[in-house]
Length: 313
Image (cartoon, rainbow, N blue to C red):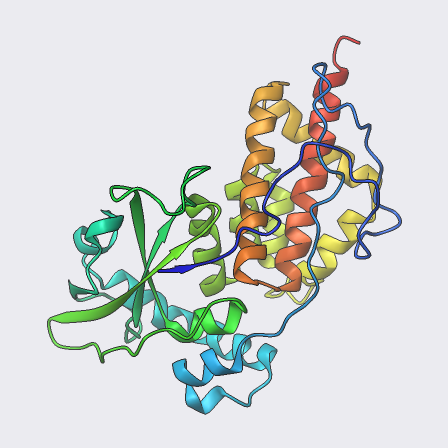
């Protein structure tokens, strides 16, 4: 089993004494007292140094792309996203949308293929079996620990995840079945990988943020329609928002209201953002817009908690 390190390994509930170099000078500073119970959260979620994707893993997945710059590869894959998503949809859900006990993972999944409407499908090449880290004090997870199955295209993973190893050879899919070699991996949060799995195919920042936090629909709509309408890009919208305290306050107030001022609910939102951060670091996902979205989600959560904690004081 390939195990991805959970770095940073611990999520310390304390204020960081120094700010990472990517922090923006105009980002508003929230109070360190995140709740009446003196809960303290890190001021920022550290963005690790950039590491480019593995050319070895990429050359195995797509030899013709081995020397192509990363951004061109991702642009090319995004253009093919409808075909790849059609290939994912073609897999019989009864065979792919499930979990296996760790000790009973098959070396490969043979999945029936369904006819799907739309563009000609590009079928996935592998299945990731994603499990959680073993309990503290154990060297490996129990034999019955669930491993959640995700169908993937090797080239998509290689183009986005710098810390994944070379995937095993795949079999051509066609006829009635797809044969998907299974790669077991351990991630800090298998649940958060659901969001990453969707993002690396669609690059939909609005969908990802909506899955993390209840944000105003007009703001999410601006992110989804920005490029198509010829307006500012999602990256420009996110960075402008992070640099505008009044807009951040509006988003935080919306979140606090949507959470009914409940610090328990807001802590749950903070935990989801933290889990996504851990998986991004562990896998080596260095998409700039995705990191901007993570920064924004964290700022809004901190602001919402501060507003909720201030009620009645």
